[in-house]
Length: 231
Image (cartoon, rainbow, N blue to C red):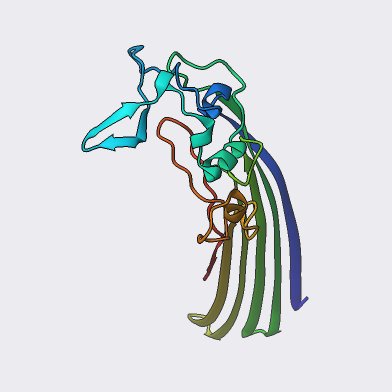
């Protein structure tokens, strides 16, 4: 009757999903044809040729079409990391891709506690806590390496608590308590360390993740590098 203990294990397996609406380059634009590009007022948006810059003036591409021969090799390779449109676009060509952004959570929690009474006046208590969790979000592209919403996260939280309670007399009790806590969080990306930038032909940059591409009016490409936090 002087020693009591318990242990528990809790497991969570959870999948959540949300629908995202994004804008990606369509088939004509991937071939350099922007003849159908218009603004919200239905006015044509002109694409200018930077090679014709003279002072503050530039000449537009004929027919608003960029010759394939003018495509940068890196940009041509990066086009493969955008999904193709799967729905009708708005009048301005926006919101032409819809898909589900799926995220899975795997979590295990273990707790154990032991209480022991050495004698009537002295009691010892020890508790251990462990929380392991993994989150995998593959984004909505179907290409998690370049999807800006895709990520991996691993977390581990551990703590141990010990306390000693001594009763000097009925109206005087002392408790000594010590706690150790350690937390580790690792944020990762799909394709990390695979030198995806180099495979695109982009040299001299980090190999840790997919490079960031920002195109005004379109959903960008992005791959964060792995980050680790320990406390």
